[in-house]
Amino acid sequence: MKKISVIIPMYCEEKIIEECYTRLTNVLRKIEQYEYEMIFINDGSKDKTLELLIEFANQDVHVKIISFSRNFGHQAAVTAGLKYATGDAIVIIDSDLQDPPEVIPEMLTLWENGNDVIYGKRKKRKGESGFKLLTAKLFYNTLNALSETEIPKDTGDFRLVDRRVVDCINLLPEHNKFLRGLFSWVGYKQIPYEYERQERFAGTTKYPFGKMVKLASDGILSFSTKPLKLVGILGMISLIISFAILLCAIFSFIFKWNSLMPGWTSIMLTVTFFAGVQLLSIWIMSEYIARIYDESRARPQYIIDKTYNI
Image (cartoon, rainbow, N blue to C red):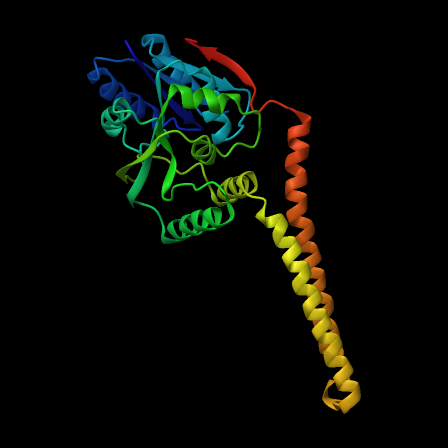
């Protein structure tokens, strides 16, 4: 009998746990031709998330728990779930129930038809601000313009993935993982599954603006070297501008353009422009160097404190 693994990262979600467990269990029990497991990753929660999860694990052997020693982030939590999942098909879903568990049977049908990755594509996103929708669209447009690997737009981590794809992801040694990009990078047969994303069931988002910026940064720097090439382009533009200023100064001297003689504006403009270009170039290169440094330290992406039913 084939087996389904469902990976659910959790960080301070005590208000959601019961509803999340109930809805997932109701869906998975109805799919009688499959065995199943639910792997909850407690990402260093500071509320009663772990206590409630343990209660479910004690009464249901299908519930498995990985508890981190501290908060390591959403991508690290999903990575741990992928490592410990034993299913033939693996589903990644957030605990906030914005991605409805009820669509899993339809995704399984698409998987049985020979598709290796069925990624959730949001045709409508309820309960999200215009700012978030705009920045998400800007992010994916920028990422696909810079990256050599096309990453589907309007997608998140919600997807169903074949065992062999997960095995490939688990072999990748990098630490700053951008998983939705890596799933596109490994290839195989991938198709979208369109659905309406619901409002969050309860609580508040655990992905504030700062974490969204970090995620976007990881995505761009992990899948593109074009920002480094941009440094060279900025350098060429700077040379052209400086040459134009030189010509302007020469003609000013020859034709006695007294209006340019004070020179304060042009000097300040030149200094600030070149300073900005240099600082921008250093920042771009330092981001890549920082990631090389992170990889060279070879620290684990997460530390597991305890496991239950594993």
